[in-house]
Every structure is written in structure tokens, then in C-alpha cells.
Image (tube, rainbow over all chains, first blue to last red; front, side, top):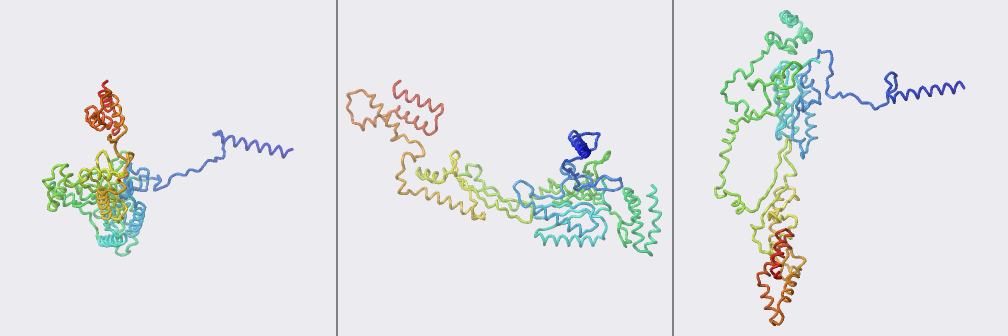
Length: 170
Length: 336
């Protein structure tokens, strides 16, 4: 008898709890059982104490592309009726990694890759970490290697900065 | 303010330490001073004396060279600064451009180190002066348009066959595009030497490719892999069509009334009916030859009019004018 009573009271409390989830009981605490929706974390630097300098590229999130930001890579493959988009994307990724490694610590900002016909132009902003003759050598080395790899002329246009251009502090 | 006074005071110490303790001391001092250096970097005053960040072991100081824009005159030759397409160089463009979304209560970021200005394509190499120079350079390779071909009609008359092909330009290592092999050949049948039979046969042979309204035959070829091959194939098709249409096969004699492309009044039920009607309408008693009567009747103006109206109706369909014409012709024939 007592056991059945206990079971029934347990049952009623469980029912009440389920009811409360359905009726969105603000006062009570209930189990939420909806699907998970995670926050978007792509290419975002979260707001912090205010001591971290970020560039314009890092400060604006990806949903601002075509609103306040431009595109880092330009080619015709994404137009209607053109093919080769996947190949160009893979080429871009490879080039970014190669240059990030070749000029390690010297890059001030993301690379900009432009394609004019079959000419591949890589525009980079660099910090003055190495003496100029080393930069010249690395630029020539990258151009030679990439043009042999991709069988098309590759040009690098680099600009030197004293330090990274800060847009804001997050 | 404390930060800005901190660095110069330490400067002689830094230099002395370098000689004895080497790199390590400099790195640690630099790291501690890094944040403060970052804050005061906008003042150009202390720049001259400070060694560069991360310049390990380099005692040579790299002074910031003034940008090229300072030495540009107003009437310089811009085509020498940007002779070809190039990305935006802030030290070569003497314009105070700003680009970017401004910070709150701030202004858009300046051009120095601005990635947005580098991302966008610019037309600094295509000023009107530059284009004039391009035209001048291309002129020796151009020839005049022939003076005799001064109207479209003349071009059509001398060059009746028109061949269209498309070339594709895209950005990528390869310049091959499979859609570039398609050839379209258009020719007006009026410019070809065809008699009635040949014309009808050619139209029948070409089927969908003939456009009645503009009297053009369009041949599109894309079955071969190369443009030249498709062009040769199109010309071959045109030649074959032309020659075949001039030939008359044995079985073409069996063309029946149902195969005719358009309505022909001679020997049609309409002609027979009208002749019968008119014969019956004649007053009795006149015995004449059947053949002569027929010829006479056919020669009459009203019969000719009736023939025209019926042919029009059958060929062009029923329109207001056609129906009116038919009505008038019938009324005249039957003396109503």
C-alpha cells in the first residue's frame, strides 16, 4: 500500500514536471528536451578584455563579407556556367599554407589571391622581420616553385609594413 | 605617457646590454615593451631611434623611407606609375583614400596596410591617356575597312554565308573550354542559286533548321571535338544539301496532292466545283465543246479572282481581308 502510494506520488510529480515543460513554467526548473543549436564560431574572435589588437579582417565576421568586407580570392569559376571552382579553391588553400610557412611570422594579414587570365597574383602584406635580401630570395623561390607546380605564371606583390595595422581592440 | 618616457630612457641601456648579453636581453625587453610600443606607434617621433621589433642581432636601424607619393609632381606621367594591372600600392598612389567600415566615433581606416583596397580590382592602369597609348600601339596592325562594303545589304550580297563561333576566356591555368567548338552557319536561301523544285526540296531536307519568316537556313555543328572540324562539317552539310536538292530522284514523280507544301488551285476539287456550277448556270441550248468552254470559263476575270481568294485562304489561313475577298469573288461569280 505504502509502496504503491509512493509510486503514485512519484508518478504525479513526474507528470507535473512533464506538464511544466510543456506549459513553459517559468518559475519551476524543468528538463529541456529540444534539439541543440550551437553558436557559430567560424572565423570569429570573441570579444574579450579589450587588450587584444585585431586587424580589420579579423574583426569583421564572415557574415559581413559582401557587406563590409571584400573577397580574399578572385576568379571566374564561381560565375554562372563556368567550371573549375573546386580546383581553384584547392589551389588557393595550398598557396595560403605554403606562404604561411615560407614567410613564417612575417605576414601582417591574410593573403589576397587574384587570377588574371592564367596569371596568378599573390598580394601579401609583410612585416619587416627579415632583411630585404632574404625577402627577395623567398619571393623568387615561391614564384618559381608555384609556377612550376601549377604550370602558369605566378607573381607575388608584397608590401612592407612596420607593424600590423590595428582596427580595434577586442 | 609613462610608456613613452620609458623607452628612450632605457635606450642606452639596451644598446650596452646588446653587446654583452646578446639577443636574450633584447627579446625580453622587447616583449615587455611590445604593448607600450604598440600604443605609441602612431607617434612618429620616437621611431627614429628605436630598433625594429624582432630584429634579432641586427644593429643596423632601418629608417622609414618616405613614400614615393611625396616626390610625385602633379603633371607626371601616370602610365609610368601603373603601366599594367597591379594591386593597389598605398605608397605609389598619391590619393588620401580611406576604405572600410569605421569604428564607433571614428573614420574608415587609412590606405596604409589596408587589405580592402588591395582586394578590389582597380583601374589605375586604364586612364584615358593609357588607353590612347594602347590605341596608338595597335594602329600599325590594323587595316582599313574596305570602302566598297558600306552597307549591310552589300555585306550580305558579297558574303552570304555567316559563320559564328564563340571563344571563352576564364581565370585558371588551362585555356581550353569545350563549348568553344560549336559552330553556327547561317545562309539566306535567296542568295543561293535554286529553282522552285530545288528550293522546296532543300526546305524539306533541312526541316527544323529552316526559318520561313527570315528565309534563313541555320546549321549548328558540335559533334566534332575541334572548331575547325566542325566548320568543315558545316560547310560539307551545306554543299551536300545544295547538290541533293538539285537532283531529281525517280520516286519524286509519285508526289501526290497530300505531299504538296502549299495549296495549288489547278486540278483541285474547288476548280472542278466552280466549273460545274458555272456550266450549269449557262443557259440551255448552247452546244459548245467542253474543252473550249472550260478554257473560256477559266479565262474569266471573276474566276481568276475566285482562284486568288481561295488560294489565299488555304495558304494563309482565315483573316478578315481574306474572307472579305472570298465573299466579293463569290458574289461576282454568282451575280448576286
